[in-house]
Length: 154
Length: 103
Image 1 (cartoon, rainbow over the protein chains, first blue to last red):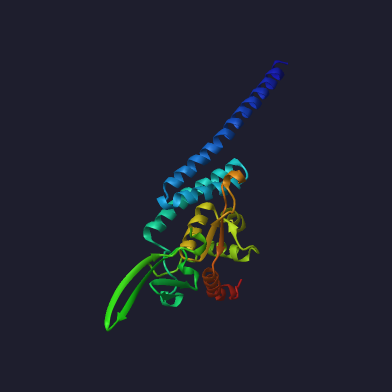
Image 2 (tube, rainbow over the protein chains, first blue to last red):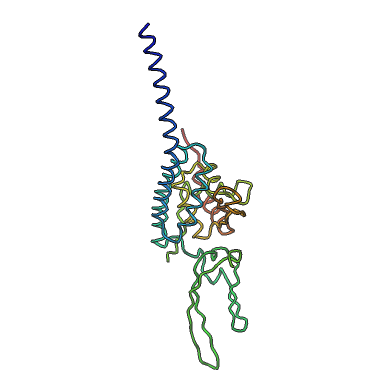
């Protein structure tokens, strides 16, 4: 009889403790996710932080369940390290084809129009040299421009 | 500035494949992750690298986060250059896939 009462009491205690622990863990999961994302964002190059923070929060919010969110957020720690490495090394910031075949420069009056036929110039840097000749005198100037796609221009 | 192309790894091909074969013009990072099963830690450096190389372009979802009640999604799509280079990369791999496998 005593053992029966004790067993029921123990079962109730375990159920209550389990519920408390479960509620507590549920409270902690979003906090852990936030800490992981904040930590990952802080490791990014400064120019990439704002964009990737919003993008990563958006991705995490689409994951069902707290643990899946933590798993995704944990991945951002290694992602931020890799992205920082890419930016530092200048990797992938390049034109896939020689500029001469990728674009055409039109000179109209004193304005240079860059006619783009291919996308590698999007979001990229472009260096070009203009050699101008007038009355037998030549001048050379080199320009380094950042190409902004039309849709992103103000 | 390096002149080499982005590394074509298995996950990179999966990402390009998902974008090229989804039937939709653009996909968000979460959708790409779901379609390819590539983890977030691998996916975002790939998207970042491909975008910087001009193989992908991206844009924000057309709405205000306040109105949406959540952060905006970032949508990615393959550029003409990306599609051309991805197809060329797959073609380069075809002979290896096409070989007879002996048991």
